[in-house]
Amino acid sequence: MSPSGGSPDRLRVAVVGATGLVGRTIIEILEERQFPLAALDAVASADSEGTPIEFGSRLLRVRALETYDFSVVDLAFFALETGSSELHVPRAIAAGCCVIDNSRVYRMDPAVPLIVPEVNLSALAVTPAPRLIANPNCSSIPLAIVLRCLDDLAGLVRVDLATYQAVSGAGRKGIEILARESRNRLSGQDMTPDPLFAMVPIAFNVIPQIDDFESSGYTREEMKIVRELRKILDRPDLEVNPTAVRVPVFFGHAAAVHAELGRPLDPGLLREALAAIPAVRVHDHPGAGGYPTPQVDATRHDEVFVGRIRTDLTRPNDLNFWVVSDNVRKGAALNAVQIGECLLARWPVRHLGGQPAGAPGPPEL
Ligand SMILES: NC(=O)c1ccc[n+]([C@@H]2O[C@H](COP(=O)([O-])OP(=O)(O)OC[C@H]3O[C@@H](n4cnc5c(N)ncnc54)[C@H](OP(=O)(O)O)[C@@H]3O)[C@@H](O)[C@H]2O)c1
Image (cartoon, rainbow, N blue to C red; front, side, top):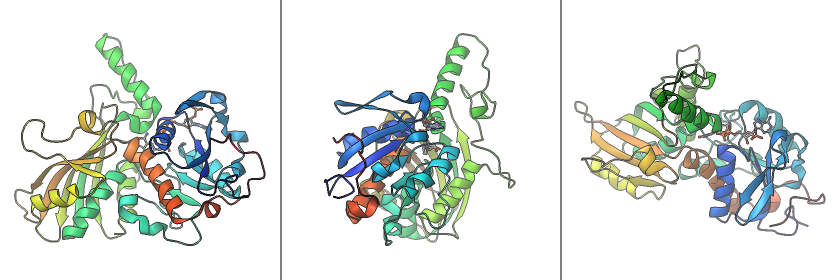
């Protein structure tokens, strides 16, 4: 019997962190894209055990991670915080399951592919099939797609950028905090700042800190962008100079980018090249509203939106532009599901899930 209980082209899948922003969106996208599923399990903390989660016309009941047996699935999408990923990803792999992990834990491990399907699918061209693939940070994914195009066209030398990151990048709790602080502020009540946003109010504010500081004076979020872009683009020499900023927006990360190139590049040529990439939408018409914004363009859309493309005023080799995308979809869940689709296109199901399906698995779909 195949690992998928007699369905040779379909996978038995678990979504771990299924009640969170990324996990719930992975489940939605598996349904939207008709991912070839033999079975699907929703897994989260013991507190959520039994919680119903919609999957098409069906209801999945959440299973508790602590006691979940990964030998009954071929592929697990993990959408947990770092500590829980560190504990349970090795357990899933030991049970013979292939893992696509959304946390930062494994991204910089040289043995673990860090994949943006539009950019570096070749990193998956290894034998045997990788057991663990890391999904990049929500700012790194859209930037990598645009920067790959620039590098191919005119040789990327250096990137200076500032991100404008939505509160949903910090999970469900980020959304709750912005909603609560906004209500309190508008009704004249005190705003008690939350440690999630460094004890600084996020409502009606802008915070130049995401995650903890490293000894260099850069934050961990900024260094994720530096290190991940170098790995994804396979450009260890690339100069990247980021400032990561949290803004009071619910969904959609933006970035203002200044790229130094090896030679001049006409903005029109860049627009054309970007427009030819299916994952990118160019929205660039100088004038009111002629550029993408997180709420109007990015939220609940799959594409990476690019606008404000223009040559630097004094340096002909340099371009400025603006990138916007949905941090929960292309920045996390969609990219992870696309990696799953690529795995399935490359390897037969039996090479992904390691264990025979002797034990009873999740309900067949
Ligand atoms: N949000 C984004 O834009 C984004 C983008 C890229 C990457 N990521 C990464 O994706 C991961 C998930 O982020 P998120 O935004 O989805 O977070 P979230 O909304 O806070 O959801 C967290 C999920 O983890 C589960 N969980 C927490 N503690 C657990 C435990 N001890 N055992 C089992 N499950 C536990 C929660 O289950 P309960 O409901 O049962 O507590 C929930 O399903 C994080 O590593 C994050 O850095 C997020």
